[in-house]
Amino acid sequence: MKAMTTTASEGLRPLQRAAATGAVVLAGALLAPATSGGQPDEESVVVRSPALAYRCDTTSATHTAEVRVTWSVPGPVRAGEPVRQTDPTLTVTLDRSGVADLAARGASAVKGTADFTIRTELGGQDDAGERDRVAWRRFVVPSTSLPEDGPLELTAAGTGAPLTPAVPGELVFRGGELALLLAWDEEGAHDEAPGTGGGEHPDGGSDDGADGGSDGADGGSDGDVEPPPGTTAGSRPPGTGGGGGATRGAEEDTPVLVLECVPAPEADTTIGALTVGAGATAPGREGAGREDGPPSEDGARLPLDTEGPATGADAPGECDDFGDAQMGWCARLGGYTNVEALDAAAKVEPGIVNLAVPNITPCGDGSEWYWFCQTVTARLDHDGERRLPPTRNTFHAFGFMPTSVTVELTQVGDLEIAVRSQVIAPYDGSVVARASLSLRLDDVTVNGTPLDVGDDCRTRTPLDVSLTADYPGDYTPDQGGFLDGFLDIPPFSGCGTEEDLDPLMTNLVSGERYYVKMTQGRICDIRRNLDCPPEVPELQR
Image (cartoon, rainbow, N blue to C red):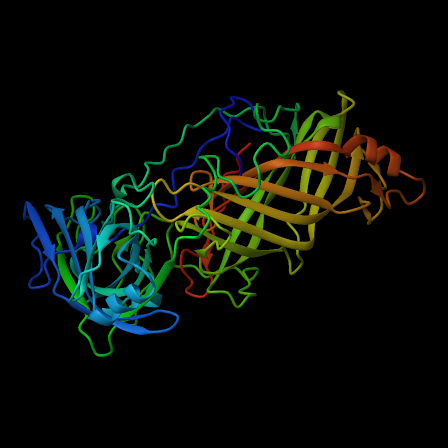
Protein backbone atom coordinates (compact mmCIF):
# COMPACT_ATOMS: atom_id res chain seq x y z
CA MET A 1 0.00 0.00 0.00
CA LYS A 2 1.03 3.65 -0.25
CA ALA A 3 0.46 7.13 1.09
CA MET A 4 -0.47 10.81 1.19
CA THR A 5 1.13 13.53 -0.87
CA THR A 6 3.47 16.02 0.73
CA THR A 7 5.84 18.73 -0.33
CA ALA A 8 7.81 18.52 2.87
CA SER A 9 11.52 17.96 3.21
CA GLU A 10 10.86 16.06 6.41
CA GLY A 11 8.77 12.98 7.13
CA LEU A 12 9.81 9.49 8.03
CA ARG A 13 12.08 10.32 5.13
CA PRO A 14 11.65 13.13 2.58
CA LEU A 15 8.83 11.76 0.48
CA GLN A 16 9.27 10.52 -3.03
CA ARG A 17 6.50 10.87 -5.54
CA ALA A 18 6.08 7.82 -7.71
CA ALA A 19 5.67 8.16 -11.44
CA ALA A 20 2.07 8.13 -12.58
CA THR A 21 1.22 4.45 -12.76
CA GLY A 22 -2.41 4.66 -13.68
CA ALA A 23 -1.22 5.57 -17.17
CA VAL A 24 -0.22 2.46 -19.18
CA VAL A 25 2.03 -0.25 -20.44
CA LEU A 26 1.43 -0.02 -24.18
CA ALA A 27 2.38 -2.47 -26.85
CA GLY A 28 1.90 -0.82 -30.18
CA ALA A 29 5.47 0.45 -30.38
CA LEU A 30 6.67 -2.79 -31.85
CA LEU A 31 4.17 -3.56 -34.54
CA ALA A 32 4.67 -3.69 -38.30
CA PRO A 33 2.10 -4.08 -41.10
CA ALA A 34 -0.08 -7.15 -41.14
CA THR A 35 0.78 -7.82 -44.76
CA SER A 36 4.48 -8.42 -44.15
CA GLY A 37 7.10 -8.47 -41.42
CA GLY A 38 8.65 -5.08 -40.85
CA GLN A 39 12.37 -4.95 -41.58
CA PRO A 40 14.67 -3.91 -38.72
CA ASP A 41 16.58 -1.40 -40.85
CA GLU A 42 13.54 0.47 -42.14
CA GLU A 43 13.51 4.09 -41.06
CA SER A 44 9.81 4.03 -40.24
CA VAL A 45 6.89 1.61 -40.56
CA VAL A 46 3.23 2.64 -40.58
CA VAL A 47 0.83 0.03 -39.21
CA ARG A 48 -2.71 -0.13 -40.58
CA SER A 49 -4.45 -3.29 -39.50
CA PRO A 50 -7.31 -4.84 -41.45
CA ALA A 51 -10.82 -4.65 -40.03
CA LEU A 52 -11.10 -7.06 -37.09
CA ALA A 53 -14.56 -8.51 -36.41
CA TYR A 54 -15.78 -8.12 -32.82
CA ARG A 55 -18.86 -8.95 -30.76
CA CYS A 56 -19.82 -6.41 -28.08
CA ASP A 57 -22.07 -7.19 -25.12
CA THR A 58 -23.98 -4.72 -22.97
CA THR A 59 -26.13 -5.63 -19.99
CA SER A 60 -29.13 -6.08 -22.28
CA ALA A 61 -27.98 -6.62 -25.87
CA THR A 62 -25.24 -7.87 -28.20
CA HIS A 63 -23.89 -5.81 -31.11
CA THR A 64 -21.18 -6.27 -33.70
CA ALA A 65 -18.26 -3.96 -34.42
CA GLU A 66 -15.19 -3.63 -36.60
CA VAL A 67 -11.90 -2.66 -34.96
CA ARG A 68 -8.86 -1.13 -36.67
CA VAL A 69 -5.56 -0.07 -35.11
CA THR A 70 -2.99 2.30 -36.55
CA TRP A 71 0.40 3.58 -35.43
CA SER A 72 3.91 4.14 -36.75
CA VAL A 73 7.20 2.70 -35.56
CA PRO A 74 10.45 4.61 -36.01
CA GLY A 75 13.25 2.27 -37.08
CA PRO A 76 15.54 0.51 -36.98
CA VAL A 77 14.08 -2.04 -34.54
CA ARG A 78 16.62 -4.14 -32.65
CA ALA A 79 16.48 -6.51 -29.73
CA GLY A 80 17.27 -4.97 -26.39
CA GLU A 81 16.47 -1.45 -27.51
CA PRO A 82 13.27 0.41 -26.55
CA VAL A 83 10.95 1.14 -29.43
CA ARG A 84 8.50 4.01 -29.24
CA GLN A 85 5.15 4.22 -30.99
CA THR A 86 3.89 7.33 -32.70
CA ASP A 87 0.25 8.42 -32.90
CA PRO A 88 -1.45 5.16 -31.86
CA THR A 89 -5.16 5.21 -32.67
CA LEU A 90 -8.00 2.76 -32.26
CA THR A 91 -11.04 2.97 -34.54
CA VAL A 92 -14.25 1.15 -33.57
CA THR A 93 -17.19 1.01 -35.98
CA LEU A 94 -20.36 0.04 -34.13
CA ASP A 95 -23.17 -1.56 -36.13
CA ARG A 96 -26.63 -0.05 -36.72
CA SER A 97 -28.18 -2.00 -33.85
CA GLY A 98 -25.63 -0.42 -31.51
CA VAL A 99 -26.49 3.04 -32.83
CA ALA A 100 -30.20 2.31 -32.34
CA ASP A 101 -29.48 1.10 -28.80
CA LEU A 102 -27.71 4.36 -27.94
CA ALA A 103 -30.44 6.47 -29.53
CA ALA A 104 -33.13 4.58 -27.62
CA ARG A 105 -31.28 5.44 -24.41
CA GLY A 106 -31.48 9.15 -25.24
CA ALA A 107 -28.04 9.71 -26.77
CA SER A 108 -27.48 12.07 -29.69
CA ALA A 109 -23.70 12.20 -29.28
CA VAL A 110 -21.29 10.09 -27.21
CA LYS A 111 -17.84 10.47 -25.65
CA GLY A 112 -15.76 8.19 -23.48
CA THR A 113 -12.72 5.94 -23.21
CA ALA A 114 -11.45 2.67 -24.68
CA ASP A 115 -9.17 -0.06 -23.32
CA PHE A 116 -7.73 -2.51 -25.87
CA THR A 117 -5.66 -5.62 -25.25
CA ILE A 118 -3.06 -6.95 -27.70
CA ARG A 119 -1.84 -10.57 -27.55
CA THR A 120 1.47 -11.86 -28.88
CA GLU A 121 2.76 -15.02 -30.52
CA LEU A 122 6.31 -16.24 -31.05
CA GLY A 123 7.16 -18.77 -33.72
CA GLY A 124 3.52 -19.73 -34.23
CA GLN A 125 3.01 -20.50 -30.54
CA ASP A 126 0.62 -18.67 -28.25
CA ASP A 127 2.29 -16.70 -25.49
CA ALA A 128 2.99 -18.70 -22.36
CA GLY A 129 0.45 -18.07 -19.64
CA GLU A 130 -0.61 -14.89 -21.42
CA ARG A 131 2.53 -13.30 -20.02
CA ASP A 132 2.89 -10.93 -22.93
CA ARG A 133 -0.57 -9.45 -22.97
CA VAL A 134 -0.12 -5.73 -23.39
CA ALA A 135 -2.72 -3.04 -23.46
CA TRP A 136 -3.73 0.41 -24.56
CA ARG A 137 -5.39 1.97 -21.55
CA ARG A 138 -7.86 4.83 -21.35
CA PHE A 139 -7.61 6.03 -24.90
CA VAL A 140 -9.95 8.99 -25.20
CA VAL A 141 -12.99 8.96 -27.49
CA PRO A 142 -13.91 12.61 -28.27
CA SER A 143 -17.51 13.68 -28.67
CA THR A 144 -19.01 12.07 -31.76
CA SER A 145 -22.55 12.59 -33.07
CA LEU A 146 -24.70 9.58 -33.83
CA PRO A 147 -25.38 9.23 -37.56
CA GLU A 148 -28.91 9.51 -38.87
CA ASP A 149 -28.37 6.28 -40.75
CA GLY A 150 -25.65 3.66 -40.80
CA PRO A 151 -22.94 2.58 -38.32
CA LEU A 152 -21.13 4.78 -35.79
CA GLU A 153 -17.39 5.28 -36.22
CA LEU A 154 -15.46 6.16 -33.05
CA THR A 155 -11.76 6.98 -33.01
CA ALA A 156 -9.80 6.77 -29.75
CA ALA A 157 -6.30 8.17 -29.28
CA GLY A 158 -3.80 8.04 -26.46
CA THR A 159 -0.14 8.07 -25.54
CA GLY A 160 2.01 4.95 -25.43
CA ALA A 161 5.05 3.94 -23.41
CA PRO A 162 8.08 2.24 -25.01
CA LEU A 163 8.33 -1.53 -25.25
CA THR A 164 11.58 -3.46 -25.59
CA PRO A 165 11.97 -6.74 -27.55
CA ALA A 166 14.50 -8.90 -25.71
CA VAL A 167 15.53 -11.18 -28.60
CA PRO A 168 15.53 -11.00 -32.40
CA GLY A 169 12.92 -12.80 -34.48
CA GLU A 170 9.40 -12.36 -35.80
CA LEU A 171 6.56 -11.43 -33.46
CA VAL A 172 2.90 -11.72 -34.41
CA PHE A 173 0.34 -9.49 -32.70
CA ARG A 174 -3.38 -10.22 -32.42
CA GLY A 175 -6.36 -8.28 -31.14
CA GLY A 176 -7.73 -9.18 -27.73
CA GLU A 177 -10.40 -7.78 -25.44
CA LEU A 178 -11.88 -4.32 -25.92
CA ALA A 179 -13.75 -2.34 -23.26
CA LEU A 180 -15.62 0.69 -24.57
CA LEU A 181 -17.17 3.19 -22.15
CA LEU A 182 -19.57 5.67 -23.74
CA ALA A 183 -21.39 8.53 -22.03
CA TRP A 184 -23.83 11.22 -23.14
CA ASP A 185 -26.33 13.70 -21.80
CA GLU A 186 -29.82 14.67 -22.82
CA GLU A 187 -28.65 17.73 -24.73
CA GLY A 188 -25.78 16.00 -26.51
CA ALA A 189 -22.18 15.61 -25.50
CA HIS A 190 -19.73 18.47 -25.32
CA ASP A 191 -17.07 18.98 -27.92
CA GLU A 192 -14.56 17.20 -25.73
CA ALA A 193 -14.88 14.84 -22.81
CA PRO A 194 -14.45 16.86 -19.60
CA GLY A 195 -10.87 16.96 -18.41
CA THR A 196 -9.44 15.07 -21.35
CA GLY A 197 -6.67 17.52 -22.06
CA GLY A 198 -6.40 16.18 -25.60
CA GLY A 199 -6.22 12.58 -24.46
CA GLU A 200 -2.66 12.67 -23.23
CA HIS A 201 -1.62 10.96 -20.08
CA PRO A 202 0.19 12.96 -17.42
CA ASP A 203 3.90 12.49 -17.18
CA GLY A 204 4.75 11.11 -13.78
CA GLY A 205 7.94 12.11 -12.06
CA SER A 206 9.80 11.39 -8.89
CA ASP A 207 12.07 13.53 -6.79
CA ASP A 208 14.47 11.39 -4.85
CA GLY A 209 15.05 12.74 -1.40
CA ALA A 210 17.99 11.97 0.83
CA ASP A 211 17.37 9.57 3.65
CA GLY A 212 16.27 11.28 6.81
CA GLY A 213 17.75 9.70 9.95
CA SER A 214 19.61 6.39 10.14
CA ASP A 215 18.44 2.87 10.71
CA GLY A 216 19.23 1.27 14.02
CA ALA A 217 21.19 -1.96 14.11
CA ASP A 218 18.03 -4.01 14.39
CA GLY A 219 15.79 -1.99 12.13
CA GLY A 220 14.61 0.79 14.43
CA SER A 221 15.47 4.42 13.92
CA ASP A 222 16.31 6.76 16.78
CA GLY A 223 15.14 10.33 16.44
CA ASP A 224 11.49 11.16 16.07
CA VAL A 225 10.64 12.95 12.86
CA GLU A 226 7.82 15.29 11.95
CA PRO A 227 5.07 14.22 9.57
CA PRO A 228 4.76 16.26 6.38
CA PRO A 229 3.73 19.84 7.13
CA GLY A 230 0.10 20.45 6.32
CA THR A 231 -0.90 16.79 6.64
CA THR A 232 -2.98 16.48 9.76
CA ALA A 233 -5.42 13.82 10.73
CA GLY A 234 -8.46 14.28 8.58
CA SER A 235 -6.82 16.98 6.46
CA ARG A 236 -7.84 15.20 3.26
CA PRO A 237 -11.42 13.97 3.13
CA PRO A 238 -11.74 10.25 2.34
CA GLY A 239 -12.57 9.62 -1.28
CA THR A 240 -11.03 12.80 -2.64
CA GLY A 241 -7.77 12.93 -4.53
CA GLY A 242 -4.99 15.34 -3.83
CA GLY A 243 -5.44 16.68 -7.34
CA GLY A 244 -8.86 18.12 -6.67
CA GLY A 245 -11.02 15.20 -5.63
CA ALA A 246 -14.31 14.06 -7.01
CA THR A 247 -16.25 16.44 -9.22
CA ARG A 248 -19.94 16.17 -8.54
CA GLY A 249 -22.34 15.89 -11.44
CA ALA A 250 -25.43 17.92 -12.11
CA GLU A 251 -28.79 17.04 -10.62
CA GLU A 252 -28.95 13.98 -12.82
CA ASP A 253 -26.09 11.59 -13.50
CA THR A 254 -24.69 11.40 -17.01
CA PRO A 255 -25.85 8.11 -18.58
CA VAL A 256 -23.09 5.59 -19.28
CA LEU A 257 -23.03 2.47 -21.46
CA VAL A 258 -20.20 -0.06 -21.18
CA LEU A 259 -19.59 -2.43 -24.10
CA GLU A 260 -17.45 -5.50 -23.37
CA CYS A 261 -16.09 -6.66 -26.73
CA VAL A 262 -14.22 -9.81 -27.80
CA PRO A 263 -13.18 -11.11 -31.22
CA ALA A 264 -16.03 -12.75 -33.08
CA PRO A 265 -15.92 -16.56 -33.19
CA GLU A 266 -13.55 -17.89 -35.87
CA ALA A 267 -12.52 -14.32 -36.77
CA ASP A 268 -8.94 -13.59 -37.84
CA THR A 269 -7.49 -11.32 -35.16
CA THR A 270 -4.09 -10.73 -36.76
CA ILE A 271 -2.96 -7.14 -36.35
CA GLY A 272 0.54 -7.42 -37.76
CA ALA A 273 4.03 -8.82 -37.41
CA LEU A 274 7.37 -7.30 -36.57
CA THR A 275 10.83 -8.48 -37.54
CA VAL A 276 13.27 -7.61 -34.79
CA GLY A 277 16.95 -7.51 -35.64
CA ALA A 278 19.84 -8.39 -33.36
CA GLY A 279 20.95 -5.44 -31.28
CA ALA A 280 24.48 -4.46 -30.36
CA THR A 281 23.81 -5.40 -26.75
CA ALA A 282 21.60 -8.36 -27.49
CA PRO A 283 23.13 -10.52 -30.29
CA GLY A 284 21.57 -13.80 -31.25
CA ARG A 285 19.06 -15.05 -28.69
CA GLU A 286 20.73 -13.36 -25.76
CA GLY A 287 18.43 -10.75 -24.21
CA ALA A 288 19.55 -7.34 -23.07
CA GLY A 289 19.23 -6.04 -19.58
CA ARG A 290 17.31 -9.02 -18.18
CA GLU A 291 16.62 -12.68 -18.75
CA ASP A 292 13.95 -13.83 -21.16
CA GLY A 293 10.53 -14.75 -19.91
CA PRO A 294 9.33 -18.25 -19.11
CA PRO A 295 9.58 -20.84 -21.90
CA SER A 296 6.61 -21.76 -24.04
CA GLU A 297 5.72 -25.38 -24.68
CA ASP A 298 8.27 -25.68 -27.50
CA GLY A 299 11.03 -24.29 -25.27
CA ALA A 300 11.21 -20.90 -26.99
CA ARG A 301 11.61 -17.85 -24.80
CA LEU A 302 9.07 -15.07 -25.05
CA PRO A 303 10.79 -11.92 -26.22
CA LEU A 304 8.87 -8.99 -24.79
CA ASP A 305 10.02 -6.81 -21.94
CA THR A 306 7.33 -4.43 -20.71
CA GLU A 307 9.80 -2.74 -18.40
CA GLY A 308 8.62 -4.65 -15.36
CA PRO A 309 10.53 -7.01 -13.07
CA ALA A 310 11.80 -10.32 -14.42
CA THR A 311 9.28 -13.13 -14.55
CA GLY A 312 9.85 -16.84 -14.23
CA ALA A 313 9.71 -17.83 -10.56
CA ASP A 314 6.53 -19.04 -8.92
CA ALA A 315 4.44 -17.06 -6.48
CA PRO A 316 5.47 -17.83 -2.87
CA GLY A 317 3.26 -20.15 -0.83
CA GLU A 318 1.91 -17.25 1.20
CA CYS A 319 0.32 -15.80 -1.95
CA ASP A 320 -3.30 -16.93 -1.67
CA ASP A 321 -5.96 -16.38 -4.32
CA PHE A 322 -8.63 -16.20 -1.61
CA GLY A 323 -11.44 -14.34 -3.34
CA ASP A 324 -13.81 -14.77 -6.25
CA ALA A 325 -13.05 -11.32 -7.66
CA GLN A 326 -11.93 -10.75 -11.24
CA MET A 327 -8.24 -10.74 -10.26
CA GLY A 328 -6.18 -12.43 -7.54
CA TRP A 329 -2.90 -10.72 -6.71
CA CYS A 330 -0.28 -10.65 -3.98
CA ALA A 331 2.34 -8.05 -3.06
CA ARG A 332 4.88 -7.28 -0.34
CA LEU A 333 4.04 -4.56 2.16
CA GLY A 334 6.03 -2.92 4.93
CA GLY A 335 6.70 0.47 6.46
CA TYR A 336 7.47 2.74 9.37
CA THR A 337 5.57 4.49 12.13
CA ASN A 338 6.66 7.17 14.53
CA VAL A 339 6.69 6.33 18.24
CA GLU A 340 6.75 9.75 19.85
CA ALA A 341 7.46 8.51 23.39
CA LEU A 342 10.66 6.86 22.15
CA ASP A 343 11.54 9.74 19.84
CA ALA A 344 11.95 7.11 17.14
CA ALA A 345 10.48 5.45 14.06
CA ALA A 346 9.60 1.74 14.30
CA LYS A 347 10.06 -0.45 11.23
CA VAL A 348 7.90 -3.31 9.96
CA GLU A 349 9.66 -5.56 7.45
CA PRO A 350 7.78 -6.21 4.19
CA GLY A 351 5.41 -9.17 4.28
CA ILE A 352 2.81 -10.65 1.94
CA VAL A 353 -0.56 -8.98 1.40
CA ASN A 354 -3.07 -10.82 -0.80
CA LEU A 355 -5.46 -8.76 -2.90
CA ALA A 356 -8.87 -9.72 -4.30
CA VAL A 357 -9.41 -7.12 -7.01
CA PRO A 358 -12.78 -6.48 -8.70
CA ASN A 359 -13.23 -4.64 -11.97
CA ILE A 360 -13.40 -0.89 -11.65
CA THR A 361 -16.93 0.36 -12.37
CA PRO A 362 -18.84 3.67 -12.37
CA CYS A 363 -19.05 4.99 -8.80
CA GLY A 364 -22.81 5.44 -8.94
CA ASP A 365 -22.81 8.07 -6.20
CA GLY A 366 -23.82 11.13 -8.19
CA SER A 367 -20.32 11.87 -9.46
CA GLU A 368 -19.66 12.77 -13.08
CA TRP A 369 -19.68 9.81 -15.47
CA TYR A 370 -15.89 9.64 -15.67
CA TRP A 371 -15.44 8.79 -11.95
CA PHE A 372 -14.95 5.05 -11.44
CA CYS A 373 -14.54 3.12 -8.19
CA GLN A 374 -13.41 -0.26 -6.89
CA THR A 375 -12.90 -1.75 -3.43
CA VAL A 376 -10.01 -4.19 -3.09
CA THR A 377 -10.20 -6.71 -0.25
CA ALA A 378 -6.81 -7.54 1.30
CA ARG A 379 -5.42 -10.18 3.66
CA LEU A 380 -2.01 -10.31 5.31
CA ASP A 381 -0.17 -13.63 5.36
CA HIS A 382 3.02 -14.59 7.20
CA ASP A 383 3.65 -18.26 7.99
CA GLY A 384 -0.04 -18.96 7.42
CA GLU A 385 -1.24 -16.26 9.83
CA ARG A 386 -2.79 -12.89 9.01
CA ARG A 387 0.12 -10.77 10.12
CA LEU A 388 3.20 -8.94 8.93
CA PRO A 389 6.65 -10.38 9.74
CA PRO A 390 7.78 -9.75 13.34
CA THR A 391 10.49 -7.09 13.10
CA ARG A 392 13.32 -6.37 15.54
CA ASN A 393 13.70 -2.68 16.43
CA THR A 394 16.31 -0.94 18.58
CA PHE A 395 15.78 2.46 20.21
CA HIS A 396 17.10 4.58 23.08
CA ALA A 397 14.36 4.70 25.71
CA PHE A 398 14.22 7.90 27.75
CA GLY A 399 16.84 9.28 25.40
CA PHE A 400 19.75 7.21 26.70
CA MET A 401 18.85 3.56 27.48
CA PRO A 402 19.34 1.05 24.61
CA THR A 403 16.09 -0.86 24.19
CA SER A 404 15.31 -3.63 21.72
CA VAL A 405 11.87 -5.06 20.99
CA THR A 406 10.22 -7.26 18.39
CA VAL A 407 7.12 -5.64 16.93
CA GLU A 408 4.32 -7.72 15.37
CA LEU A 409 1.18 -6.46 13.60
CA THR A 410 -1.73 -8.90 13.18
CA GLN A 411 -4.86 -8.32 11.11
CA VAL A 412 -7.95 -8.72 13.29
CA GLY A 413 -10.60 -7.26 11.00
CA ASP A 414 -11.21 -6.30 7.43
CA LEU A 415 -8.49 -4.70 5.33
CA GLU A 416 -9.90 -2.83 2.35
CA ILE A 417 -8.47 -0.47 -0.24
CA ALA A 418 -11.02 1.88 -1.80
CA VAL A 419 -9.86 3.29 -5.15
CA ARG A 420 -11.58 6.21 -6.84
CA SER A 421 -10.27 7.67 -10.11
CA GLN A 422 -11.18 9.44 -13.29
CA VAL A 423 -11.12 7.33 -16.44
CA ILE A 424 -10.14 10.35 -18.53
CA ALA A 425 -7.25 12.80 -18.21
CA PRO A 426 -6.02 14.12 -15.85
CA TYR A 427 -6.86 10.78 -14.13
CA ASP A 428 -7.07 12.32 -10.67
CA GLY A 429 -8.30 10.19 -7.82
CA SER A 430 -7.66 8.87 -4.36
CA VAL A 431 -7.01 5.69 -2.44
CA VAL A 432 -8.15 5.02 1.12
CA ALA A 433 -6.95 1.88 2.94
CA ARG A 434 -8.63 0.89 6.19
CA ALA A 435 -7.50 -1.88 8.52
CA SER A 436 -7.94 -3.14 12.07
CA LEU A 437 -4.67 -4.42 13.54
CA SER A 438 -3.37 -5.73 16.85
CA LEU A 439 0.13 -4.67 17.97
CA ARG A 440 2.15 -7.16 20.02
CA LEU A 441 5.54 -6.63 21.69
CA ASP A 442 7.94 -9.52 22.32
CA ASP A 443 11.55 -10.28 23.27
CA VAL A 444 12.17 -6.97 25.01
CA THR A 445 15.65 -6.10 26.31
CA VAL A 446 16.61 -2.97 28.22
CA ASN A 447 20.30 -2.08 28.34
CA GLY A 448 21.04 -5.66 27.30
CA THR A 449 18.94 -7.23 30.07
CA PRO A 450 15.85 -9.27 29.05
CA LEU A 451 12.54 -7.89 30.28
CA ASP A 452 9.99 -10.69 30.54
CA VAL A 453 6.86 -9.20 29.02
CA GLY A 454 5.32 -12.61 28.30
CA ASP A 455 3.75 -13.90 25.11
CA ASP A 456 0.63 -11.76 25.07
CA CYS A 457 1.83 -8.19 25.54
CA ARG A 458 -0.40 -6.37 23.08
CA THR A 459 -2.61 -3.33 22.65
CA ARG A 460 -5.75 -3.52 24.77
CA THR A 461 -7.88 -2.72 21.72
CA PRO A 462 -7.09 -2.95 17.99
CA LEU A 463 -5.45 -0.13 16.07
CA ASP A 464 -7.89 1.44 13.63
CA VAL A 465 -5.71 2.40 10.69
CA SER A 466 -6.80 4.68 7.83
CA LEU A 467 -4.17 5.55 5.23
CA THR A 468 -4.59 7.54 2.05
CA ALA A 469 -2.80 8.16 -1.23
CA ASP A 470 -3.12 10.20 -4.38
CA TYR A 471 -4.14 8.31 -7.49
CA PRO A 472 -2.33 7.62 -9.70
CA GLY A 473 0.77 9.46 -8.49
CA ASP A 474 1.44 7.83 -5.12
CA TYR A 475 -0.21 4.43 -5.32
CA THR A 476 -2.10 1.98 -7.49
CA PRO A 477 -2.95 -1.58 -6.40
CA ASP A 478 -1.00 -3.17 -9.27
CA GLN A 479 2.09 -0.95 -9.39
CA GLY A 480 2.35 -0.36 -5.65
CA GLY A 481 3.52 2.82 -4.01
CA PHE A 482 2.92 4.30 -0.60
CA LEU A 483 0.06 5.28 1.68
CA ASP A 484 0.35 7.33 4.82
CA GLY A 485 -1.65 8.88 7.61
CA PHE A 486 -1.92 8.96 11.38
CA LEU A 487 -2.91 6.38 13.97
CA ASP A 488 -3.44 6.06 17.70
CA ILE A 489 -1.66 3.27 19.62
CA PRO A 490 -3.91 2.21 22.54
CA PRO A 491 -2.67 1.24 26.02
CA PHE A 492 -1.15 -2.22 26.48
CA SER A 493 -2.37 -5.17 28.51
CA GLY A 494 -1.07 -8.67 29.28
CA CYS A 495 2.51 -7.46 29.68
CA GLY A 496 4.67 -9.12 32.34
CA THR A 497 4.76 -12.59 33.88
CA GLU A 498 6.04 -11.79 37.38
CA GLU A 499 5.07 -8.13 37.56
CA ASP A 500 2.61 -5.83 35.84
CA LEU A 501 4.51 -4.17 33.00
CA ASP A 502 1.43 -2.73 31.31
CA PRO A 503 2.11 0.83 32.59
CA LEU A 504 5.73 0.71 31.42
CA MET A 505 4.88 -0.53 27.91
CA THR A 506 2.01 1.94 27.67
CA ASN A 507 4.25 4.86 28.66
CA LEU A 508 6.96 3.76 26.24
CA VAL A 509 4.86 3.05 23.16
CA SER A 510 1.24 4.24 23.35
CA GLY A 511 0.10 7.62 22.12
CA GLU A 512 -2.08 9.54 19.69
CA ARG A 513 -1.60 10.72 16.13
CA TYR A 514 1.55 8.82 15.29
CA TYR A 515 2.57 9.32 11.66
CA VAL A 516 2.68 6.04 9.70
CA LYS A 517 3.83 5.31 6.17
CA MET A 518 3.43 1.95 4.40
CA THR A 519 4.99 0.94 1.08
CA GLN A 520 3.77 -1.79 -1.28
CA GLY A 521 5.75 -3.28 -4.16
CA ARG A 522 4.52 -4.29 -7.60
CA ILE A 523 2.02 -7.12 -7.57
CA CYS A 524 2.35 -10.76 -8.57
CA ASP A 525 -0.64 -12.01 -10.60
CA ILE A 526 -1.31 -15.31 -8.83
CA ARG A 527 -3.66 -16.85 -11.38
CA ARG A 528 -1.37 -16.21 -14.34
CA ASN A 529 1.90 -16.50 -12.36
CA LEU A 530 2.84 -13.16 -13.90
CA ASP A 531 5.57 -10.91 -12.43
CA CYS A 532 6.14 -13.41 -9.64
CA PRO A 533 7.43 -13.55 -6.98
CA PRO A 534 6.24 -10.09 -5.89
CA GLU A 535 9.03 -7.55 -5.61
CA VAL A 536 10.36 -6.46 -2.23
CA PRO A 537 9.78 -2.69 -2.06
CA GLU A 538 12.29 -0.18 -0.82
CA LEU A 539 10.51 1.20 2.20
CA GLN A 540 9.97 4.96 2.08
CA ARG A 541 10.42 6.93 5.28
